[in-house]
Image (cartoon, rainbow, N blue to C red):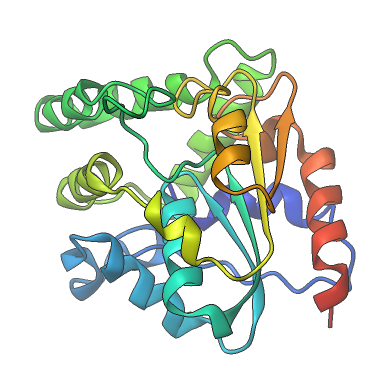
Length: 240
């Protein structure tokens, strides 16, 4: 995906908030640039995002972007005033000691499908974002519009993203986060299970963990008013 997914929420935010949208390397406005497409590990994304932040900010990260935001706060605490992690997890795949995640072969299947049929793989990916939610068609249409507005990343970029999702484990990084953390999960998310919420509360007791009823993997699209109000509340101390 790309930063166009946030646009519908912008109209709901007060003028006191100045959002800065950052496309990850190889995505959105960076999809046509050769060098950003070489990003193959999480820290490549982190370094790029860090270069775009000029002063401490409320950093919002969705899904893979949540991994980037979490790692950013660990490596560059001076650039982050607060974290809001949306439908994200410190580890996206299951392990013997980590069951609140999807099975590893989910990402393997997507990588294999990308090699055969990009369009069909994206349709399946978008459907997974909204599985079990009541606002599924609205959410899918807005995600599709974001892709139409900014273009589809190269296959290499998407496979690199899947590899980063499947290999990253930032559970130990939670101990190093010094800024306030808010976490927003959807109770119908098919990618980041709601069972993650109590686990996060144990791992990061100082964090504010919220579960949005009826939301899937894109709560800022299915519940834009709720999300915009959350941003307003969190950004208030840092508004320009």
